Image (cartoon, rainbow over all chains, first blue to last red; front, side):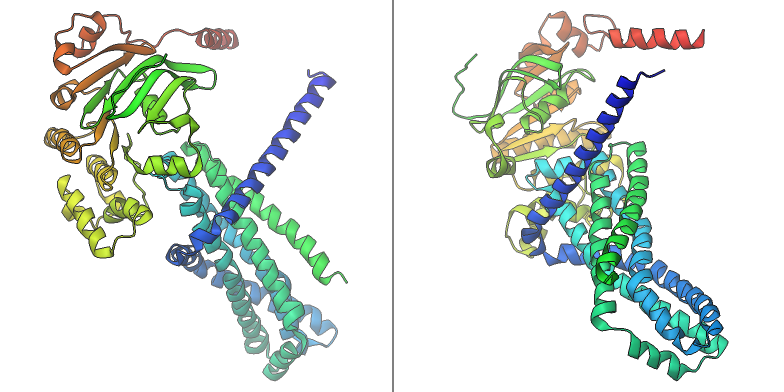
Length: 262
Length: 276
C-alpha cells in the first residue's frame, strides 16, 4: 500500500506532467502562429488543406445538420404548441442553430472527422521519418506541414458551421412547414425578425472560429507528439477526440457566458 | 584531440562519442570524407551506423569530440546557419521517408520547390532527368502507395541527389534492391560522386557492392572503430574482426547474440518470480 508521501509525490508528478504538456501545447501554437506569415504566402498549400479538411467533412456535416434540424423542428413544435406559439418555430430553430448547435455540433463532428485524420496523418509522417527527412532537407516541418493544416482547419470550420446551420434550418422547415403544416410566411418572417446579425450570427461565427483553432491545434499537437508506433498513433487519435470535445464544450460554456450572459 | 584536415575535407569526425541520453553507442570515432570520395561506413546491425548519419546531419549532438561539415562545427550551428549547411547535403533515408501525400514526381521536386526559384519547366526537366537516372522516369505520375519498396528507395535516391549536393549521405542504399537495381545503384553513386565532385558517405553492410565503389572504408563494431583503409587493404587484412565480417563467419570476435545486461537479468528474475 502506498504511503501518503508517495501519493502526494505521485500527484505532484502528474500535475507537473500536465503543466509541462500544456506548456508544450502553447509553445507549438506559438510556433505555428510565428511561422504563419511565410507559410500563408504559399496560398496553394492552405487551399489544398481547406479542400482536404473541408470538402471531405461536408457530407457528414450536411447530413447531421439535416437530422438536427428535423429533431429541433419536432421538439420545439411540441413545446411551442403548448403555449400556442407554433409560428415562432422558425425563429427558435434558427436561434438554436446559429447561437449554439451549429458551432458546437459542427466542432464535435469536425474533431471526429477531420481532427482524427490530421492526427493520424502527422503521426504516421513522424513514424515514417517524413518529418525528420524534411528537417534534414533544411525544410521546417512546422512551417511546411503544420501551418497549412492549421489554417486549413481554421478556415474550414466556420464555413462548415454555416452549412450545418443552413441545412438545419431547412430541416426545421421540412418538419414544421411541410409535415406539420405551420404557415410558411410566419415561419420565415419570425426568423427574419428575430435573428440578429451581430448578436446571433456574428457570435456564432466567433464561436466556430475559436472551435476551429482549438480542435485543429489539439489534433496537430496530438500527431506531433505521438509516439512513432502504430499504438502511439492510435492513442494520439483517441486523445484528439477526447481532448478537443471537452475543450469545445468548455470553451462553449465560457463564450456563451461572455456573449449572452448580460 | 586536434587533427589537421586536408583542405578538401567535406565531413570529419574527430574523436567523437555518440549516444542517446546517458547511453553511449559509439566512442572514439575519427573518420573523414574528402571531396570526390566514396566512403563506406560498415558494421553489423545495431552497431551504430545510423547514429553516425544522425550526427552528420546534426539530428543528434556528439557527447564528446567534434563533428565538422564543410569546415563548420555542427554543434555550434543553429537556425539559419544550420539550414544553410543542410541545403548542401543530400540524405537517403533507410526507409526512403518519401512523402506519402505527394506522388513520385512531387517527391523528387520537393527540394527544388522549397529551396530554388526555378521555373516549372526547369523543375520538370531536372526531376525527370534524376528519375531517369534511377530508371523511374515513367513512374513519375504514380502515387507512393503504388510503387514497390525497391522503387521507393530509388525515388528517395533521386530526391537526395536532385539539388546536386556537395555531401550525400546514404543510409543502407542497397537494402531491399534486386540484383539489377543494386548494381545500377552502386554505379550511379560512384558516377554521381565523380561527376558532381561531391563526397558520398555510404552506411551499409553490403560488402561486395560497397567495396566495388568505395575509396575508403571504415568498419564499426563493439562501440568503436574497428578498422579503416581502402577496400584492397581491408580485403588483405588478417584482423579477426575484419575477417569475420568480410567472410560472413558465424564465429569470431563479433558476437551474434545480444549481450546479457543487468536490466535483462532483473526482468527475467521478476518474470520467474511472478510465474512461481
